[in-house]
Image 1: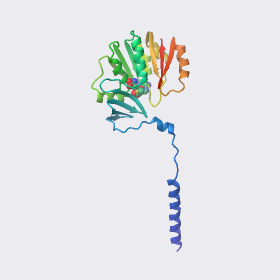
Image 2 (image 1 turned 90 degrees about the horizontal axis):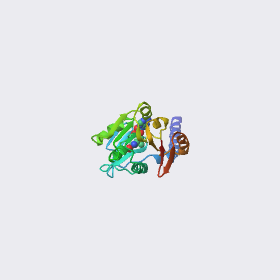
Image 3 (image 1 turned 45 degrees about the vertical axis):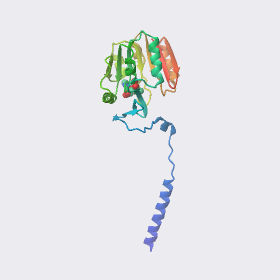
Image 4 (image 1 turned 120 degrees about the vertical axis):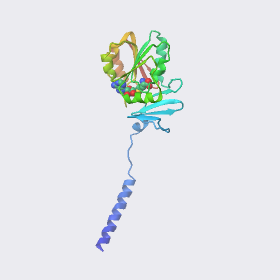
Length: 232
Ligand SMILES: C[S@@+](CC[C@H](N)C(=O)[O-])C[C@H]1O[C@@H](n2cnc3c(N)ncnc32)[C@H](O)[C@@H]1O
Protein backbone atom coordinates (compact mmCIF):
# COMPACT_ATOMS: atom_id res chain seq x y z
CA UNK A 1 0.00 0.00 0.00
CA UNK A 2 2.82 2.40 1.06
CA UNK A 3 4.70 1.39 -2.10
CA UNK A 4 1.83 2.47 -4.32
CA UNK A 5 1.44 5.82 -2.52
CA UNK A 6 5.19 6.43 -2.92
CA UNK A 7 5.05 5.79 -6.71
CA UNK A 8 1.98 8.05 -7.12
CA UNK A 9 3.79 10.84 -5.19
CA UNK A 10 6.85 10.61 -7.47
CA UNK A 11 4.64 10.74 -10.60
CA UNK A 12 2.80 13.85 -9.29
CA UNK A 13 6.09 15.66 -8.44
CA UNK A 14 7.52 14.79 -11.92
CA UNK A 15 4.40 16.18 -13.65
CA UNK A 16 4.62 19.41 -11.58
CA UNK A 17 8.35 19.84 -12.43
CA UNK A 18 7.87 19.19 -16.20
CA UNK A 19 5.00 21.70 -16.22
CA UNK A 20 7.14 24.32 -14.41
CA UNK A 21 10.23 24.02 -16.65
CA UNK A 22 8.31 23.84 -19.93
CA UNK A 23 6.87 27.28 -19.14
CA UNK A 24 10.23 28.81 -18.20
CA UNK A 25 11.10 31.88 -20.30
CA UNK A 26 14.71 32.29 -21.43
CA UNK A 27 15.91 35.88 -21.69
CA UNK A 28 17.61 36.67 -25.02
CA UNK A 29 19.74 39.75 -25.65
CA UNK A 30 18.16 41.12 -28.86
CA UNK A 31 21.25 43.26 -29.56
CA UNK A 32 23.27 40.06 -29.98
CA UNK A 33 20.57 38.44 -32.12
CA UNK A 34 20.49 41.51 -34.36
CA UNK A 35 24.19 41.12 -35.17
CA UNK A 36 23.82 37.59 -36.51
CA UNK A 37 22.94 37.46 -40.19
CA UNK A 38 20.75 34.50 -40.96
CA UNK A 39 21.37 32.71 -44.22
CA UNK A 40 18.78 31.03 -46.30
CA UNK A 41 21.33 29.65 -48.76
CA UNK A 42 23.94 27.03 -48.09
CA UNK A 43 27.55 28.18 -48.08
CA UNK A 44 29.63 27.15 -51.10
CA UNK A 45 32.68 26.61 -48.89
CA UNK A 46 33.68 27.02 -45.22
CA UNK A 47 36.96 26.99 -43.33
CA UNK A 48 37.69 27.87 -39.70
CA UNK A 49 35.18 30.47 -38.59
CA UNK A 50 34.45 31.68 -42.16
CA UNK A 51 32.02 30.65 -44.91
CA UNK A 52 31.54 31.90 -48.47
CA UNK A 53 28.01 32.24 -49.88
CA UNK A 54 26.81 32.74 -53.43
CA UNK A 55 24.00 35.29 -53.19
CA UNK A 56 22.42 37.26 -56.07
CA UNK A 57 25.59 37.02 -58.22
CA UNK A 58 27.77 38.09 -55.30
CA UNK A 59 30.35 36.18 -53.30
CA UNK A 60 29.78 36.95 -49.63
CA UNK A 61 32.20 36.10 -46.79
CA UNK A 62 30.70 35.72 -43.33
CA UNK A 63 32.59 35.02 -40.14
CA UNK A 64 32.51 35.82 -36.44
CA UNK A 65 28.82 36.74 -36.77
CA UNK A 66 29.42 39.45 -39.40
CA UNK A 67 29.47 39.95 -43.13
CA UNK A 68 33.20 40.54 -43.66
CA UNK A 69 33.44 40.96 -47.41
CA UNK A 70 31.37 40.76 -50.58
CA UNK A 71 31.65 41.54 -54.28
CA UNK A 72 29.92 41.00 -57.59
CA UNK A 73 31.27 37.86 -59.25
CA UNK A 74 31.77 39.57 -62.63
CA UNK A 75 32.38 43.26 -61.97
CA UNK A 76 34.02 42.97 -58.48
CA UNK A 77 31.84 45.92 -57.39
CA UNK A 78 30.45 45.89 -53.84
CA UNK A 79 27.66 47.65 -51.96
CA UNK A 80 29.73 49.00 -49.04
CA UNK A 81 29.52 52.79 -48.74
CA UNK A 82 33.09 53.07 -47.36
CA UNK A 83 34.45 51.35 -50.47
CA UNK A 84 32.70 53.97 -52.63
CA UNK A 85 34.11 56.81 -50.47
CA UNK A 86 37.64 55.43 -50.96
CA UNK A 87 37.06 55.12 -54.73
CA UNK A 88 35.97 58.80 -54.84
CA UNK A 89 39.06 59.77 -52.82
CA UNK A 90 41.35 57.86 -55.24
CA UNK A 91 39.70 59.56 -58.26
CA UNK A 92 40.18 63.01 -56.73
CA UNK A 93 43.86 62.30 -55.94
CA UNK A 94 45.62 61.13 -59.13
CA UNK A 95 48.98 60.95 -57.28
CA UNK A 96 47.69 57.82 -55.49
CA UNK A 97 49.40 54.90 -57.21
CA UNK A 98 50.24 52.48 -54.38
CA UNK A 99 47.86 51.09 -51.74
CA UNK A 100 48.30 48.89 -48.67
CA UNK A 101 45.13 47.13 -47.50
CA UNK A 102 45.14 45.81 -43.93
CA UNK A 103 42.67 42.90 -43.69
CA UNK A 104 42.19 41.02 -47.00
CA UNK A 105 39.00 39.15 -46.12
CA UNK A 106 37.72 37.74 -49.40
CA UNK A 107 39.57 40.44 -51.35
CA UNK A 108 36.64 42.70 -52.27
CA UNK A 109 38.61 45.98 -52.01
CA UNK A 110 41.85 44.79 -53.70
CA UNK A 111 39.89 43.26 -56.57
CA UNK A 112 37.87 46.45 -57.07
CA UNK A 113 40.81 48.88 -56.93
CA UNK A 114 43.06 46.64 -59.05
CA UNK A 115 40.70 47.45 -61.93
CA UNK A 116 41.77 51.11 -61.85
CA UNK A 117 44.54 52.02 -64.34
CA UNK A 118 45.68 54.71 -61.90
CA UNK A 119 46.61 52.10 -59.26
CA UNK A 120 49.92 50.35 -59.98
CA UNK A 121 50.46 48.28 -56.82
CA UNK A 122 48.33 46.91 -53.96
CA UNK A 123 49.89 45.14 -50.96
CA UNK A 124 47.46 43.26 -48.69
CA UNK A 125 48.12 41.99 -45.16
CA UNK A 126 45.90 39.31 -43.65
CA UNK A 127 46.37 37.40 -40.41
CA UNK A 128 44.07 34.47 -41.13
CA UNK A 129 45.27 31.90 -43.69
CA UNK A 130 41.79 30.39 -43.95
CA UNK A 131 40.31 33.43 -45.73
CA UNK A 132 43.01 33.23 -48.41
CA UNK A 133 42.32 29.52 -48.92
CA UNK A 134 38.63 30.40 -49.32
CA UNK A 135 39.53 33.16 -51.82
CA UNK A 136 41.65 30.67 -53.76
CA UNK A 137 38.83 28.18 -53.90
CA UNK A 138 36.56 30.66 -55.72
CA UNK A 139 39.07 32.72 -57.77
CA UNK A 140 42.09 31.21 -59.57
CA UNK A 141 44.74 33.79 -58.72
CA UNK A 142 45.42 37.32 -57.56
CA UNK A 143 45.54 40.19 -60.07
CA UNK A 144 49.19 40.84 -61.07
CA UNK A 145 49.45 44.13 -59.20
CA UNK A 146 48.19 42.59 -55.91
CA UNK A 147 50.66 41.15 -53.35
CA UNK A 148 49.53 39.08 -50.38
CA UNK A 149 51.30 39.08 -47.00
CA UNK A 150 50.21 36.63 -44.33
CA UNK A 151 50.66 37.98 -40.81
CA UNK A 152 49.71 40.63 -38.32
CA UNK A 153 49.12 44.05 -39.89
CA UNK A 154 50.77 46.00 -37.09
CA UNK A 155 53.93 43.85 -37.29
CA UNK A 156 53.97 44.31 -41.05
CA UNK A 157 53.83 48.11 -40.73
CA UNK A 158 56.47 48.04 -38.02
CA UNK A 159 58.93 45.93 -40.04
CA UNK A 160 58.47 47.09 -43.63
CA UNK A 161 60.53 49.83 -45.30
CA UNK A 162 57.84 50.31 -47.93
CA UNK A 163 55.90 53.56 -48.29
CA UNK A 164 52.40 53.88 -49.72
CA UNK A 165 50.18 56.66 -51.09
CA UNK A 166 47.17 55.18 -49.33
CA UNK A 167 46.76 52.75 -46.43
CA UNK A 168 43.32 51.24 -45.86
CA UNK A 169 42.70 49.87 -42.38
CA UNK A 170 39.92 47.29 -42.72
CA UNK A 171 40.90 45.07 -39.79
CA UNK A 172 38.03 43.38 -37.99
CA UNK A 173 37.28 40.17 -36.18
CA UNK A 174 33.99 40.29 -34.28
CA UNK A 175 34.82 43.95 -33.58
CA UNK A 176 37.07 46.73 -34.86
CA UNK A 177 40.70 46.20 -33.92
CA UNK A 178 42.81 49.29 -33.21
CA UNK A 179 46.57 49.56 -33.10
CA UNK A 180 49.23 52.24 -32.85
CA UNK A 181 48.62 54.42 -35.94
CA UNK A 182 52.14 55.86 -35.67
CA UNK A 183 53.22 52.69 -37.53
CA UNK A 184 50.81 53.47 -40.37
CA UNK A 185 52.04 57.07 -40.53
CA UNK A 186 55.63 55.82 -40.85
CA UNK A 187 54.62 53.88 -44.00
CA UNK A 188 52.94 56.79 -45.78
CA UNK A 189 54.52 58.91 -48.51
CA UNK A 190 54.52 62.68 -48.05
CA UNK A 191 50.85 63.73 -48.46
CA UNK A 192 49.86 60.06 -48.25
CA UNK A 193 46.54 59.15 -46.60
CA UNK A 194 45.30 56.63 -44.07
CA UNK A 195 41.70 55.49 -44.29
CA UNK A 196 40.09 53.77 -41.29
CA UNK A 197 36.85 51.82 -41.56
CA UNK A 198 35.04 52.60 -38.29
CA UNK A 199 32.07 50.33 -38.83
CA UNK A 200 30.43 49.36 -35.49
CA UNK A 201 32.64 51.84 -33.57
CA UNK A 202 30.45 53.98 -31.33
CA UNK A 203 33.06 56.20 -29.67
CA UNK A 204 34.89 57.10 -32.89
CA UNK A 205 35.30 60.74 -31.69
CA UNK A 206 37.80 59.46 -29.13
CA UNK A 207 39.99 58.11 -31.97
CA UNK A 208 39.49 61.25 -34.03
CA UNK A 209 41.13 63.30 -31.25
CA UNK A 210 44.07 60.89 -31.05
CA UNK A 211 44.50 60.87 -34.86
CA UNK A 212 44.45 64.69 -35.02
CA UNK A 213 47.65 64.67 -32.96
CA UNK A 214 49.38 62.47 -35.55
CA UNK A 215 48.13 63.76 -38.91
CA UNK A 216 47.94 67.21 -40.49
CA UNK A 217 44.30 66.78 -41.49
CA UNK A 218 41.65 64.39 -40.16
CA UNK A 219 38.03 64.30 -41.27
CA UNK A 220 35.21 61.82 -41.21
CA UNK A 221 32.31 60.98 -43.48
CA UNK A 222 29.19 59.54 -41.92
CA UNK A 223 27.10 57.20 -44.08
CA UNK A 224 25.71 53.89 -42.98
CA UNK A 225 29.13 53.60 -41.33
CA UNK A 226 31.88 56.04 -40.33
CA UNK A 227 34.89 56.56 -42.59
CA UNK A 228 37.89 58.45 -41.24
CA UNK A 229 40.48 59.92 -43.61
CA UNK A 230 43.84 61.07 -42.18
CA UNK A 231 46.21 63.07 -44.38
CA UNK A 232 49.93 62.88 -43.62
C1 LIG B 1 36.23 43.16 -42.79
S1 LIG B 1 37.41 41.91 -43.27
C2 LIG B 1 38.31 42.74 -44.53
C3 LIG B 1 37.52 42.91 -45.79
C4 LIG B 1 38.41 43.18 -46.98
N1 LIG B 1 39.23 44.38 -46.84
C5 LIG B 1 37.71 43.24 -48.31
O1 LIG B 1 38.26 43.85 -49.20
O2 LIG B 1 36.64 42.72 -48.48
C6 LIG B 1 38.52 41.95 -41.89
C7 LIG B 1 39.74 41.04 -42.04
O3 LIG B 1 40.72 41.48 -41.10
C8 LIG B 1 41.49 40.34 -40.76
N2 LIG B 1 42.31 40.63 -39.56
C9 LIG B 1 41.92 40.63 -38.26
N3 LIG B 1 42.96 40.96 -37.45
C10 LIG B 1 44.03 41.19 -38.27
C11 LIG B 1 45.38 41.58 -38.03
N4 LIG B 1 45.82 41.81 -36.78
N5 LIG B 1 46.19 41.72 -39.09
C12 LIG B 1 45.75 41.50 -40.35
N6 LIG B 1 44.47 41.12 -40.64
C13 LIG B 1 43.62 40.98 -39.62
C14 LIG B 1 40.43 39.28 -40.56
O4 LIG B 1 40.99 37.99 -40.59
C15 LIG B 1 39.48 39.59 -41.71
O5 LIG B 1 39.76 38.79 -42.83
